[in-house]
Structures are given as structure tokens and as C-alpha cells.
Length: 188
Image (tube, rainbow, N blue to C red):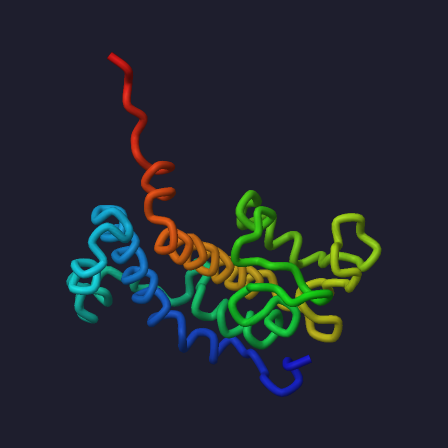
């Protein structure tokens, strides 16, 4: 529905690719720091953790902008325009319109390639697994389906949404996270 007002073109999406790579590096750094610090045990120290400078991020980012690496930042833009009407801006779902995606077991248990294929084909309203009764159009749109590379960007953004949801849950229940990630101790 919003696609007629916002035209997605390759030049616009290419403009966000370089910053997206730098953003992924920063996200990876934050996740690694979180893992080393115990996710929530030292919230005051986590807020003071150093982040890589833009120059360091740029140096670590791949030089080629024409690769086929899925881009979660471009995926966020596409998701906002194409998917959020039914699935919510943060993938939280919308009753009787679209499934929850940020905590979805369906999203979590499928590979990126499987999710791309699923989105490319869509889901019929009468599909037994369709809980809303509303069809998901192939490629996200009846009139202008997304190309496979853009669907891959959306899937990369779905992975980010799932990570954010897990981190938010870990902040609410840090002991539960520690119990599931702590190495098993052997009995003596």
C-alpha cells in the first residue's frame, strides 16, 4: 500500500549499504561486549564501554559495495514501507493482520534462504498455517513484488529484530539468560 508513495530503487538502497556495513560492525561489537560482560550484570559498565571509531568501522567494512551481502539497514527501510502495515514497525504483529515476527519461532527456526523463499511465494489466506486469515502477497506486494535481493535484506532486518527482542528479554530476566548460556558443570 505504501509502495506507491515510496519508490525503492537500487541507487537509494546502494546509498545506505556502506553505513549499513559499519552499523553491522558496531552491532557485532556491542553483542560481543554484551557476551563478555554478562548481559545485564554490569549495566553501568556496559553504558561506558568504548565503541569503535567511525574510521575503525570503515577500515573493517568490506570495500566493495556491489556484493550480494544482505543489508539489514536497507531491509529496515523496505520493511517499514512494505511489511509494517501488517507486521508492525518492530515486527510485533498486528491482530487479525500479520503475525508477530520479532519473537517468532517460525522465523527463528528457518534459514535465511528458507525465509526468502517463503516471502517470495507468500501465504494464501486459506493456508492451514495462516492464523490471520489474510493472505500475505508474494514478495510483499500484489502489484510490485520485491526482488529476491531486497527480500534477503528484509530477512537480515528480521534477524536484527529477533536479536533486539532477545536482548530486551535478557534485560528483564538476566538470571534466566545466565542459566541458559552458562556452561554445564560436571559433578565430582
